[in-house]
Image (cartoon, rainbow, N blue to C red):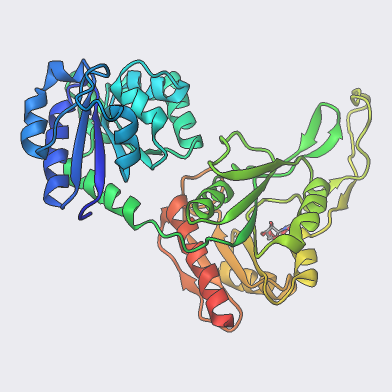
Length: 400
Ligand code: CTP
């Protein structure tokens, strides 16, 4: 962190006092810290505290322009390597999510082009309020980072999620941001995600439990690492990741067409989508009316997209498939690897707690031809995504 310029935005919550600890820790790490406080933050802690710790002038008033040669919020936004808002109140989160700029902090947030980390801290019910969660999702969708608050007793007397993480924890998050690798720069990556919908009639379809979380985490991580990412996504409610081209599709046939179309331009294809193996033989044009006691829907096989990619791939392309299994995970995954001519199969036991559909974590094994299987422990889907991308880069390196 030596020499990095960090802009610390402090907004008005009781956790503002902890921001002093963070400021001091960042200074100790060698960072140059500039502090912007909102008016309400100054009710909780004095600007002089931050000035004494950071040895830089604390800015609270957008109209106090100490240097006639520059405009403070633009100069600060340009000079920073990172902006950290800690604590981020529900109010400052809402303003940032909607582009309001009525004080020094929110104006600087609009003006900056460097990474921004928000560390929310508030009452547990406020934090879980859908309005606040929607606003946080907006921030994430724009590529801003959000540090999950901790759980425990809160100043308001409640116990739950809403605590500002301790300064050391935030310093770890900040270190990780500065370490962020850009090792996928120049690579074109296609990710598929979510489940497909197979039409029965205009109001009904067959689908599966896929949430799209794993594919979205992969697309987001690859974009963060500098790749040019296209995300072909079936049904999901997730917000689109930042800096990713999103192509929504409905059925397996749609996904097949789009993916094969885009295939020649890709360096890497990751098939995290849960593609329906069968579709109704006929999608009725009108809503099917009920008739007798039984209704039979005839299903026909969908094309296997991954297998089709496997027959067309070039030597420079890396093709990754997933295997959702409930038994004999590695044996079945190895069979899929051969049958579909993939370079890597990410196998997961979807019957295990903490793995598979809908979960925020996953437990996977990485299966490659002629390599020992790599079994990864339970990790967040975000970390699994990073591990898969590392493996893809290792495959590319092995080919050199
Ligand atoms: N897949 C695909 N097209 C299909 C079915 C699956 O591209 N029609 C891909 C998935 O995206 C995944 C991999 O194939 O990357 C394995 O999917 P999975 O559902 O685990 O296996 P299937 O091949 O469908 O085999 P089975 O359902 O018999 O286990």
